[in-house]
Image 1 (cartoon, rainbow, N blue to C red):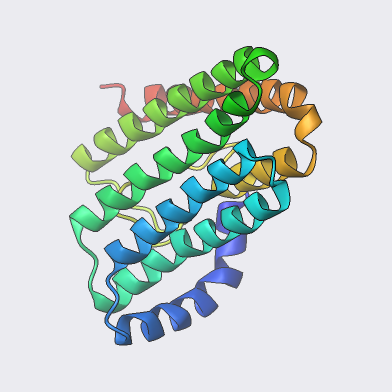
Image 2 (cartoon, rainbow, N blue to C red):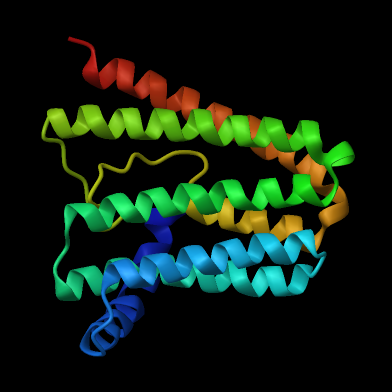
Length: 202
């Protein structure tokens, strides 16, 4: 919901930084993998209850996630780069809930499983829509230049990162926060399915 509103503010500095990184010889794929490594480090920090460190790693990971696209635009966008980016994103999104489950399996197990289920359903609705949008040659730049067609929703990347930061700031509230966010993820997925029924019904 917030992604398209913050892009006009973050894209110009990211593009400027991306051109500098590209001139250094780093590829967008390298930046993507660095972002994934930082995200995995955030998960490890959560397991070790180093929540402030986890926050720093999460922010650094998402900076790399935005920067890889800027580098790709400077060096040339590739289909594989887009594929790698979305794959690493989903690994990151699963890592943070899983880390909280590993931290306390007995207390966090059910809420964490529900949260991961909601992520799975939401991701399926997103990717399915993107496949059909490609078949229909649909295009949108509301979320920036993307390899896949991005559909907006109640919860997007910005909201998810804010949620992860909240979990790290208030880890004792993992269960209610996860249940609430999971429900909103399912609402987002349902809205996307209804949109698909309207757009793609022959």
